[in-house]
Image (cartoon, rainbow, N blue to C red; front, side, top):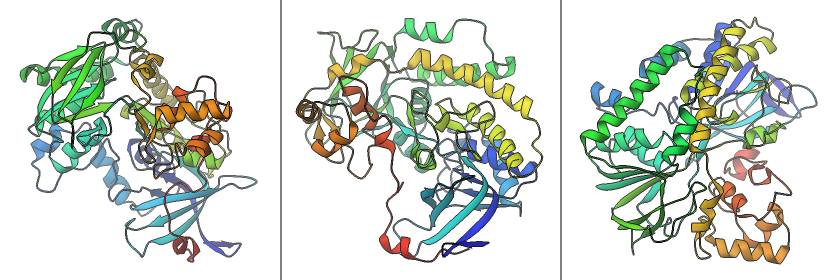
Length: 478
């Protein structure tokens, strides 16, 4: 425990932010190397979105039907929660990080229910910091996407996993990427009728992305992935769910809530083909177009970003800031297996930076490389193409928090004559709502006619989450 500038701080070897697959693996690896660890997560339980806990009273069969690698999760959780050398703090929202002249930043957190009035303030001074903050979903806007009944694919999966309920009775799943398949299978498991799965990438592009050899995955890993895919395909086939490629939801219809969607064929660059729209009756539609890394804390810590907006790391998961490591979706979207491998590598390296013995680095680096090769194939097969902006009309809302339309964004661009996000935010209020651009940021960037003049500014938030002034003013507790 130390006091600096009147603040009570907790010194710790390794601080891990985020308790999804990457964070759990990092904390476990750091503990095995001998470091004392604190693991923070904003949720009430550890596991992240991937290992979202089933509702109370669920049978073991129901739980396993919606989960993958659950045994691995329970083993990790037990190893950490039963270890006196690891403090697991749930309900902990990290709201700021303070850069230091040397070493990792100081981390500020509030612990307790976000809607409660007695959250405790805690400040940590780690010798090494691992950022495993994950990602949030990206949904491309279309006319009517703000109607009740239109939700993200992740929200549908969260309700199925965490509550055992479906978002609707007749549901369409649309977007791009392998994630659509477990979402559809989960909806079927909790009783929904899935009207179809609509994949934006064409069969040709999917084949070009996934099929070329050589595969760098180990045979057992490839077999496991194939078995998982086969399970989803069998579920969809058994329930006669149509799977359509090279198509997209380009509009949702309804008065008080969605009652139908228009699905149209799209070109290789995702431009809708005129005259191909088909109306599908639904009472819910789940849309997901991949994920966006949560980089707010990394940016505040001074970490450099890669061209795709993820945190740049080396082979040891080191960021550009000494003593700060990153793992999982924050370094690029790649799935749970890559997150686990990167987390283990980051935890070992962080323990080494904290003065412990880092072991197994070569093995971990090779495993990370294999899973990154798999992730690269996924991005080639399912990456977002620029033609999607053609289905966004001037009246389409792009910033739901502030109800800013695409037309207003385009008018602001014409008025300011610049592609700077700061001037665009000030002139149109896009990205200034509760989500602070997390939902609309990337989409607005795609609407700009030229390269950004201040790339990354939409995610630059000195205060990462909503906090009360009174909470900031309180004295930190141990």
